[in-house]
Each structure stands twice: as C-alpha cells, then as structure tokens.
Length: 320
Image (cartoon, rainbow, N blue to C red; front, side, top):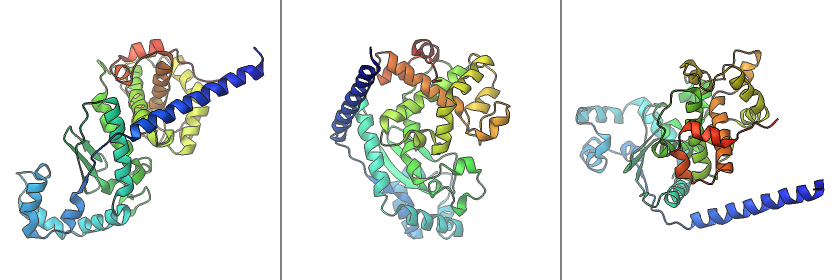
C-alpha cells in the first residue's frame, strides 16, 4: 500500500469518526432536562434572622439539629462570610454559564443511563473547604462555589498552588462529573498500583464521554503545558513504571507518588520538578482508552470491569 493511499484511509477514518461523534452529540443535545439551580448562598446572604425558619424548611438537609439557630444568625454578620458571599456573587452572577455546563452533563448522564433523574442542585458557601467542593447524592447536588473563585483569589493565598490552580469556575462541572464517575465505577479491588491507575483511568474516560465539551487538560486538571509533558513523555513514564516493577506492587507509597494530588510526580529523578502530579492517573487513562478502542464494550461494561482484565485486553503501547 502506497503512503498516499494509507494517509487517505487514515484521514477518511478520522472524518467518519468526527461525523459520528457530531451526530451523537446532536442527539444528546435534544434530550430534555429540568435543571434548576437553587442559590442557597444568595438566599442566605439576603436573609434576616427571622427568615431562618423558612430557610430550614426549604433546605432541611443543610441544617443540623445539633447546630442552634444562633450560629446561623451570627454567620449572617460574620465579616469573612459576608466577603465570601460578595466574592461568589461577583464571580458567578446569575450562574447561567455554569448552569448550562451542568445541564449538558445531565443530558449525557440521561443518555447513558435512562433511569437517571435530575437531582436538586444547590449552591452554597462553606468557608473554602476545598476538600469538599461538591457532594452528590441521588436526590441532591451541593456545590460550594466559594471554591471556584479563580486560582489567584486572595482567599486561596494559604492553599498550595497545585490545588488552587484548579479552583476555577470552569472546573465546577468537571468536579461534578468526577463525583458521578465514582458512583458509576465498580472495581472489586484497589490493591496494586495498576488497580489505582485503572480506577482513575476509568474516571477520566467517564469525564471524556460525559463532558466532551471540556478539554483533556481540564478533565485531568492540568495546564496545557502539563498535559503536553505527559503526552510527550508517555513512553518514558511507562518505561519507568515497568522497569521498576511498579504495576503489580502493593506498596502504598506508589499512589502517593503518582496518583494523589501533588505538585509533581516522584520518580526520584532529576526531572521530578519538571513533571506534573498524578501521572499515574494519566497513564491509567491511556490504558482505558486503548481498551475501549480495542474491545467492543459499552461504557457501563467497562466501568464494571476489573483492572487486570482491562489491562490485559487493552494492548496498550505508549507512542514512541
């Protein structure tokens, strides 16, 4: 086969794939959703002490019986709380752009799970508790929007930069998709380093499907340069994992070095400071992508498949 014919075939396949993707997205865009974002943060910031009973009736899941009303009254005039409300109002305004992203996520969830029913979506502030940005249940989604004011916001001055970098409004729907992925994924064990890589690879692939309007960099929480590093050095990263016999190792330090949030990955090499964190997640993503490319299985089936089977049937080979 001549090079010209080969290139023509490849281009034809790419065009066909793009057309099929466009048809699918057009079909998903027609799905009706009923997304109403309830702004508890705004209702509370505008309330008076006598309004507390009404708020408790409207949002009972936000009020613990162990916390007296006096605490909520005092928060109304707390200077930090007042500043949080002002900052979220200035940043998000009517919340329309983020609401649109959430609606598109829900359309995709409905397409891939006919039983999916839209939950109540409630925004609030939570004293910048960046470890609990979103909470997802079958009936309620809570979004602490004070965690999405922009990476350079003054409220984040004492938060490590590698965490603050993703505290952007654009990441709200990414974090929501993360939370839904965890509800969809089933994996019998997460003992080895490979288990961990595949688990997060599933999560990233799920986001790729559910929020295709987000870039790969946004989905994994990398800058463009960090994603480029991972792509360019994929073969080197994989070689390090294989040569150092990490894949089936149960050493708990490996997820800390290559899976967990961190300023960089820890190969214990001179290049470490040049690397982004979570490179194990990135490799897991590429393994899952290879598995889906080489096997005729649905998204749901893949999310329920054990890590070892995904790896064995992926025929994963990093580009050289």
